[in-house]
Image: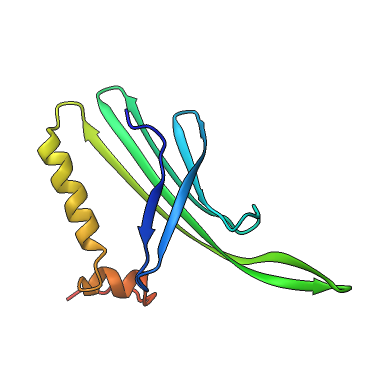
Amino acid sequence: MPALQNVVLTDRAATSHTFTPRDVKDATGLLVNTAGVPVGEKKLTVSMRKTGSKYKGKLTLSVPVVVDETINGVVMPKIVRTSYATIEVQFDDTSSTNERTNLIGMLADSLGTGKVLVHNAFVGLEGVYGS
């Protein structure tokens, strides 16, 4: 069982974002990337649960866009929108470490910029059509 620990994620602009442990509730770890103010924190959650003969894992990332809003001379941060990503995995309790490793590797590779189908759908917001 992994301990809740710092996770550093690098975006496509090569900027590193350090997510630090905040809490564990119901076997879900919460990590945040913060500038010291809870408004606008980026959040990463990770969990793994066993249900019957299946292991079900979930990873979520939420990234808000924050602007400073000035009202009557008082500057306050305000969230104007938030992007979300969720990855869910499911493994049979007879799956091997190698099987799980390869599935996660293929999933990670599918998100590369060179994978035009996935990249253009997710980043370019394009619909998918048949051949």
